[in-house]
Image 1 (cartoon, rainbow, N blue to C red):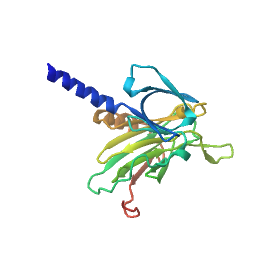
Image 2: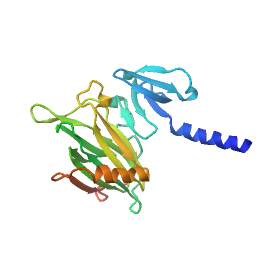
Image 3: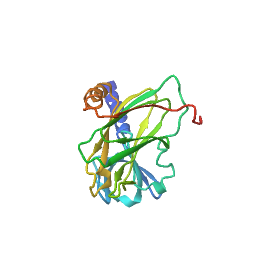
Length: 235
């Protein structure tokens, strides 16, 4: 019975450590929290030490970024982010044997003015327009960053205020990513777009069939790329 209790405690600790978020503040402190809600000007959270305790609030302007337990990062004030927006995870050496495959799709029913520049470890990959999909072969680990631009009345594209979305990429993974337009002109910039990421084998296969290969194909919709190893400096 004692061994069984210890086993349950071990599982609880593993789950607990996995589910915590990290909140980086302007005073250079880092808090381990569980984010409950992010509004226009406030962030509500629980302290991980007392999840059944009170709900706390902090002014959003005091928070540099939030690193969620699922790997996503919201950066609210990149000018204070000493790690840099595109360096949420350290650059890794290339592995020409082991690699990851990313399958990214942007197929929205919203207006056609949305485009998504994509970066990997601070290096531009490509820009996805609506009704396009990208397959990308990666030999290194790092941070995949999605920003968002929108067409102005003059026909030019400009950056829309609000945090980019960051996804950490590891070696040897099959990852499906779906870009979702939520409230493109909404007041809260955090809710203007979101990402669905699928790395679990069952979810990934479902994504590949239903979302990646399953959407109505359009002209010039496919972008197939491979990470350039020749023109990159190895760390």
